[in-house]
Amino acid sequence: MPTTKRHWASLAALLTLLVPLAGCGTGGDGGTGIGKRAGASGGKSRDDEQSIPRPPKAGLGDIIVGNRAITGSRPSGNRKVPYRRTYADGELYATVTGYRSLVYGRNELESAYDDVLNPGASSPGSRPGNVVTAISPAVQRAAMDALDGREGAAVAVDVRTGHIRALVSTPSYDPATFSGNSMEDSRGWIELTGNRHKPLLNRTRKESTPPGETFHLVVAAAALEKGLYSSVDEATDTPASYTPPGSSKALTGDPAHCGNASIRTALRYACGNIFARLAVDVGEAQLAATAQSFGFNDDELLIPTPVNPSDYPRGRNAADLAAAANGSGGVTATPVQMARVMAVIAGGGKQVHPQLVTKVVRADGSVEQPKDLAEDDGRRVVGQRTAAQLQSALRTSADGVTGWVRQWDVNSGGESVSWSVSLARSGDEGPMAIAVYLSNPRASSDRADDVALTERVVERMRRAAAASH
Image 1: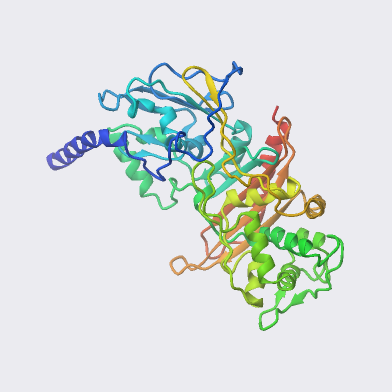
Image 2 (image 1 turned 120 degrees about the vertical axis):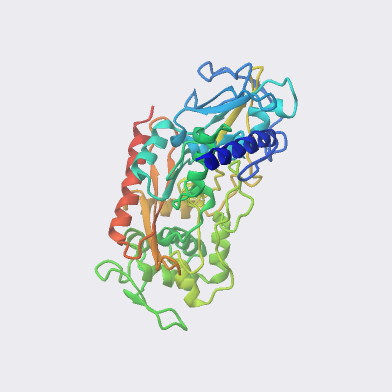
């Protein structure tokens, strides 16, 4: 017992010494402040929205969701770092706020907007500002509850503005459990970092996995753009079992629906044979160009924190194209990227840049509107007719597409990932593009169960969006 006490006493002393470093460290991704961040606007306007909380006169600035501060601060008892962060509904919004710890640094919005939330760290005496997000509390809650702690993520993006209405990664964590420098905070951090389900991993933007049949949307867009078919209702002249040139492996679809199916039917019934054939006919160059236009291989996407690239490998033969068409064979995507794909189609074929923050409210009440973080925001990805055709096709399949793919892992023996992408009609905002991803780390994972669960998550989010007002 004495040894244990000495151990914790030594650790406490070490943590206290580390506290001043937290004021300078970035933790996690090391985001930049608004003054250096791409897209920071120099223009200011007075804040006429009285419901948005004004920045505090002392302490840390707050992160706002639905006109409510979901963060706060209280004295830390440390002269060099005088305030400790507090969180309301910390687990619900951890993917948005990230954490701010006296010992372990900060990440997500806490890091990206540190110069707004904690300006006194670099400029003593400066008053903090608030960061206002686009998150819809109802849609965020619906996604969190429906995911129910499973390894997965959900993203909802306003099709018109790119505003992110939901950003959920599960299992989540409460950043308040390690925001200080006590032994209890140390134990909270150790427990989280040792958790095999990786609650600190932001799966919405940092986990890129095979998108399965949801990638059919990109293949369909490429085929329509190339003019291979005049509409989504034209028969594709593809047998229910299709073998790509130079390959001995046949790709099959439901014989009752996928033989000679149209793009509309193929999207509804996930006809792997149809999209393998489309990809081969489109060709490597066109399919790669279309994927890249949708945002694959983009290593500069910020929301404002960086999003890991979603990959579409180049240099494909016919067999590789057939595998890629069905969302495997080296193709990977983040949930943010798949929401982006759906938003392009729903938005008439133009690029939508996901944005988590709508404004920054400075200490004097003035407001800074962030500029578009991508110079090519609004550029055309596919033609308006192609987008309209795909919208029409999606309306016959519950406004969305569900995908599933089995992956193999040398450690676990195998796992599956399932996806659903969909559109939601919102009661008070623009249409929302939704992407839901779930990982099932079981070798015997069942496609029907996985797909049903992702679709239930989407449906809960759709209902919450429709009811919002």
